[in-house]
Image (cartoon, rainbow over all chains, first blue to last red):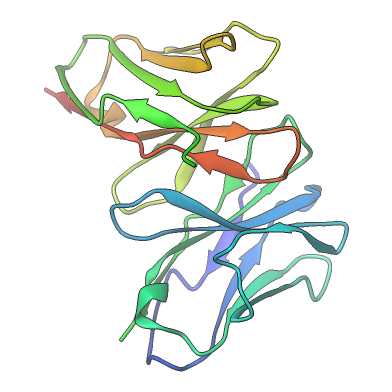
Length: 113
Length: 111
C-alpha cells in the first residue's frame, strides 16, 4: 500500500536554529498538508498545498514557516529560528482529492532545546 | 472555535465488547473522517463518511452521521487488545482545505 514517508523520525535542535522536515507524499496525490500535534494536545492544521502553491494556512503558520515542493516528489516544511514551543510531532499528509481520506506519514518528532 | 469534539475522553472496556465513541461538530461539512493513533505514532485513516451518507461500514467499524444534530459515532465491534489507541474525528468543510480535529477518545481494551 502506498505510504507517505517522513524524515527524519526524530530531530533535536537548538533554539534559534533552522530545521527542514521532509516528506514524500503519495505520487498521484494532488493535495499536501502539514499538521502538528503538541504532546497530549489536538492535531493542528498548519498549511495546505495544491497546484504548486499554498491554498490555505493557519494562524500558526507565520513567517517563521515555509513550505516547498522543490521537485515532483518532495514536500518540505522549513522552520526558521526555532522556539521551544515549536517542539511537537509534525505530520505530513496527502490525498488524491477532496472527499478522499488523508494518508499521513508517521511523523517527525521535533524537540527544541 | 472548536469543531470536532469527541466523547467520552477515555473509554476502558473488556476485550470482545463493543466500543462506541461520539463526535460533535459545529459547522457544515463536506465529510467527516475517523482516524486512529497509537501512542506516539502516526495517524491512520479509518473511514470517511460524506455529508449525504448516514451510515458506513468497514470491517468491524460502523460509522453513523447525523447532519441535523451535527454528530457522528464510531462503533468498534468485538474489540481486540490491538484496538487500544486514541481515536479522532476530523471534519472536512466545504470552504477550506484543512481538516479540523477533535481532542480524541482514548480507548483501552482490557484482555
